[in-house]
Length: 312
Image (tube, rainbow, N blue to C red; front, side):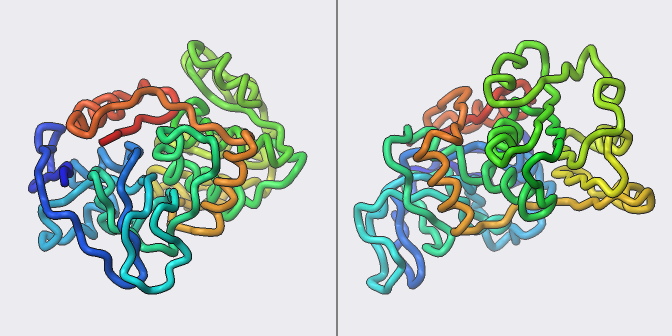
């Protein structure tokens, strides 16, 4: 089978295609023939040798195969009970933050981290959903405990995590505001949020001290600025630098840094929402597997709307 590998950390040029044997099924796992694999910011961070996934990628794992989002069809099991049968469509975020190996034609994945795919959803959306959707879901409901009627600010509302978080928060009955460039305002508005132009507007002046929850994915300064829009005792979740958490806590806010984790029950809920058309993954661009370097280059540009996906 073909897979994308790297043997050293670096820029996009370290990614290369290789041909390797198809893995054999092992207990508790299923072998998936990939139909789509999501590309995420953490893929780029890890390729550079940064972040928790790179720290866990012991040299014994080399060559390292990027990617944690996979959607495909079960083609083999080890004969034990996994809850899946050959022919089942499945998707999930696998083994994160340990190496997942999703940039490949076949992926050996722990069965307990997968869900059956929802019907009538395009393959590219399935491949792009898991990590971003789990991050959004866990940020809003597991950590921030968002409730109906609350007000939430989602930074980078047109991004991979952001556009899914907007939809999930809207479905939960929250009043949603989202920062985005002017070019993405109609898109963000169509998802259920009131957009704020981060280039020409100061979200602090627009919102005042009115937010119950903030989801930050855009850096330390945005985190610190966001404290000014939180109501007393408000909650803020950050996906980037955890350093300023203590500043928020000292001011009486609940502040947490989130690294997403695989969760089958949550993936099943995400699948349910997708099957009902209540959660849609916007796919900005689809690349063939061999062009993984170009896909990561586009991801690193920070000018994408929604998700980037690889297909074998």
